[in-house]
Image 1 (cartoon, protein in one colour):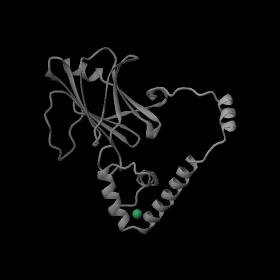
Image 2 (image 1 turned 90 degrees about the horizontal axis):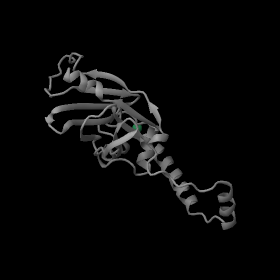
Image 3 (image 1 turned 90 degrees about the vertical axis):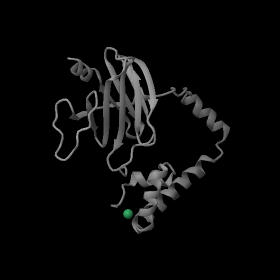
Image 4 (image 1 turned 45 degrees about the vertical axis):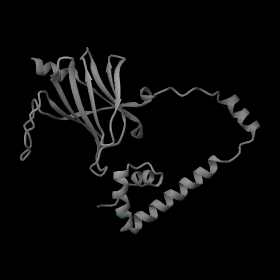
Length: 211
Ligand SMILES: [Zn+2]
């Protein structure tokens, strides 16, 4: 396994790594002195930060700060504040031939793969699965995250500005939504770690299927 990037080690030092990733990272650490040194630095920085969090701040200073910066309640879920990331369609089973050596998996609807930076979103749309609407099965992956999924992230469906439903991906980044298509149905995946949200319009593919 090659050295990991600092972000992954920061997550590791802060215990934010998924158990599966953690085991693999620990194996790498056991055999790699330079990464061990890096983790030690991140652990110390985290400990220093934690110590500061326990500092007693004089109440006069708190009152002064509050008078300058009035407290505002945090919005319940701030995906709107994330900038929109462009997602490129890199594979569409309706139009693209399969790469050599890849066996075709027959699904009732299209299979699509989107890419945005280091993130990939794999979607399967199945409109024949149920009379109630569309079954959407997806997986969110990040390049270089040890071939595993991204872990749990929120996944939302919108029609225009209205939220239709939301779910969360599981530890492998997989999610499943069953919905009735509406005008302008789109998938929104807020990735707070990257400071952005991926939005994908779903209607064109169902239209193509029904045509
Ligand atoms: Zn290393």
